[in-house]
Length: 264
Image (cartoon, rainbow, N blue to C red; front, side):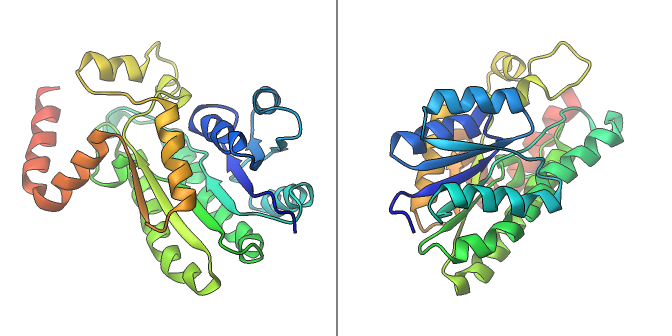
């Protein structure tokens, strides 16, 4: 087994996935870049540099495609899979009553089934690598259900619950589990969250006075999640505030969200 550590990242062609690839590569890790965007993967590999990683065209919804992709990666990484970063995700923002059922189904397939596929397929490779970690991307929308993000919130609650259960189950194999829960981060998800509309969700959030964090801050949190022993890793002050209110002042948080919806 190679001495060089290795991470496999889904959704690595852009956003938090790409920023994380750069962060790990800068520390000497071998990085497996996977996505459905083939051109984006080629650009990402060029950014992290020759010899720094490999690219794998992978639709996380396709359960049968996972094991071949991971096997090909491990062959190139010297037999290691230290971290699987289940990062790929999609979002559709807007009122639930007006949501497109196809968009809802896409979120469930990518955000939930994709994470399950990754965790199940990667387990044999993680078990074979001492000190390995499974890092799942959730969201602060998985702390308390967010208006305008109903189905997205549901998918992230599912990732959170799955991560909690696997944290207990995988401990028997010596595999750690982490759940990254960011506030809104400046990624293509925000720009592509309302198909058919000329709308930038990030700009809308900033106009309403809410912060949008940078991908580098998120990638730094992913780095900590890959090396730590905690289960939850929050990105941004607002995410930490939401967790605090959900735990200690759920009634206040509920009323605040309901009042915003009534005045929207």
